[in-house]
Amino acid sequence: MRILAIETSCDDTSAALVVARGQNTKVLGQVTASQIPIHRRFGGVVPEVAARAHAESIVPTIQELFAQCGYDAAKSMKKPPIDAIAVTCGPGLVTSLWVGVIAAKLLAAEWGVPVYGVNHMIGHLFSATVEHGAPEFPALGLIVSGGHTELVWCKSARHLKKIGATRDDAAGEAFDKFGKLLGLSYPAGPEIADLAKRGKKNSVPFPRPMLTDPSYDFSFAGLKTAGRTWILAQEKITPTMRANACASYEAAIVEVLVAKTMRAVKEFKPKTILLGGGVAANELLRAELTRALAGEKITLLLPEKKYTTDNAAMIAVAAMRTGNLFKQPWRKLAANPSFEIQ
Ligand code: KG4
Ligand code: ZN
Image (cartoon, rainbow, N blue to C red):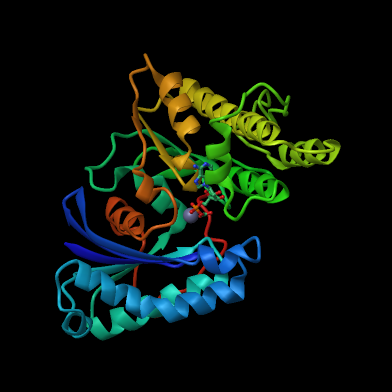
């Protein structure tokens, strides 16, 4: 089965062609038009600007994907080499989501192929399984993106339960907002991680919010405030001070994420840990999770870097792993900005 996936939930227009044999998936191609340079001058994503950019690039992105996979792009738009379409329906920015959803509706109606309206978070959840077979269940997912921080218990690919989530800012948001105050460009996560490599983790005593709270919830607003307070208290911030602050800030976020995940590991005893979301690209998080799980009989699946930030391949893989969960008539397909894992 060949599936064309479309992802436009935020600021990346992405299309991918994924082939599946049973639960084994392989990416034939993926094209992503990033809008980061467009939004950078605003310091964050501007929804109307994002929707317009998606509208401009959605068709060329799909055509480029067909060409990348070795198909004649013009012929493929008439007679596509696919069996189904998967599209992100939510959560995300409503105006961005609708662009991908309308494209999927039109193509599904025209081509007469089934369509899957996929939950974006479930895409991130399975992003570490792109180009693999199904993970061993039960699994525990840690999803850390710009908009979400969630722990998800997966009895199977179709039986998911959110056991914890952020009560305010997401981990990625905490990186981005601290970076903005430091004068870094959007999105600041990668640059903070880069600066942190030259800094000392223990130099600024940033708080570890909710670390000892018995729930599996997170909170990063207090850390963000502590970051702002630290910046305002300095007369001048030298490159060394900046690197030290970034290292301390990153360490605080990672420590909380790993501690909560390990607490859930002890209680739920999963066979697999699935890491996903933009912050899953963070080297310290990957290293600390690996270290914490050493000695445990648990498989840690880390996504390839190209599948950490928003991408269409993970949407196709989520559609395939969850069977018919998201399959629906194209007429019913609609953007659902608050489409959360329950
Ligand atoms: O999953 P994603 O592309 O978008 C959402 O669905 O939200 O995640 C983007 C987030 C941004 O906040 C970005 O700063 C963060 O992922 N990010 C990182 C790193 N790479 C991306 N945060 C920390 N370290 C990184 N290396
Ligand atoms: Zn995302």
